[in-house]
Length: 314
Ligand code: 48N
Image (cartoon, rainbow, N blue to C red):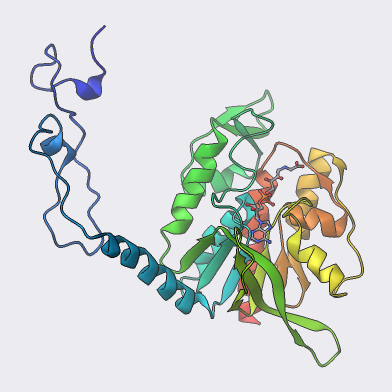
C-alpha cells in the first residue's frame, strides 16, 4: 500500500520522501518580525533540531501579563455574554461582527467552551439543524448535507465541526475576550426610579476556586447558561432569588416544532440590562425542549445580538 499522499515526494511519487510535504502555510505570526521556520525545513533532520532557548519566567510572564491586561481592559465591558454554548457563541459572533466598536466579554464556567454542542445528541456526532438555520452555517462557513425527502433540515457531519468553527471565528474578533474556567456567581444591580432593578454587570470567580470574587461592569448582559442543572439557568434563577421576576416557567417536554420557534421568537430583554436566549429561556417561559436539533440555538444567538444593538441604539 503506497504511503499517504502527504508523505509522497512530489518529485518522485513512487519513492516515499522522508519529509512531510505540507503545502506552504500562509499563516504568519501577528506582529512577528523574526524569520519563520517551516515544517518542511525541520522534518527529516531531527539530529540538529533544537527549540530556541527560554527562561521559565518568560512563559509565566507571557501568560499572566496578557491575562491581567485583559482583566483590566474588560473590567468595563459594553456587553457580557454568560455561557459560551452554541447560543452564546452565536450571539457573540453576530454582535462582534455587527458592532466592532463594542467590547464583548464572554464568561464560561467550563475550561472547554461549547456547552452541549460537541455532539449532536446522546453520543451521536452528526448535528441536525432545521431550515432556515442553514443560513447561519453558510454565514460561518460550515459545510452541511441536505437531508430528508422534503429537505426541511440539514446535517453537519460532526457537531464539533460547527462548534469548533464558530468558536474559532469568535475568538478571532479583536473586540471579543473569552474568560473560560470562570463562573458568573452573581449579577451587579442598580436601583431604578420605579423600584425595579437594572442589571449592570456580573460577579465572577474562577470556577475551580471559591476565593473573593471579581467583577465586570457592563450596561448589557446576554445570558445563555442553558437549561436548569448544576450550572444551568444561572441568571434566571438569580433573578427569582433577588425577586426581580416572580418565578420560572420551567422547561416543558420535548416538542421540536413548538420549542425551536418559541426559543428564537422569545429571545429578549427579561429585565432591563439582561437579555436571555437559548435553553436558559425555556426555564423562564416554560417553553418546550427540542432535544438534538440546534437551529434555535444559533438563531436565538442572532436575535440576542439584535436585542443588544437595539438597546445601544435606544
Ligand atoms: O449548550 P448550553 O447548555 O446552552 P445553549 O442554550 O447555548 O444550548 C443548549 C443546547 O446545547 C441544548 O441544550 C440542546 C439544543 N438540547 C436541548 C434539549 O432539549 O435537550 O451552554 C451553556 C453554557 C455551558 O458551557 C455552561 O458551562 C455555561 O453556559 N454556564 C456558565 N458559564 C458561566 N457562568 C455560569 N454561571 C454558567 N452557567 C452555565
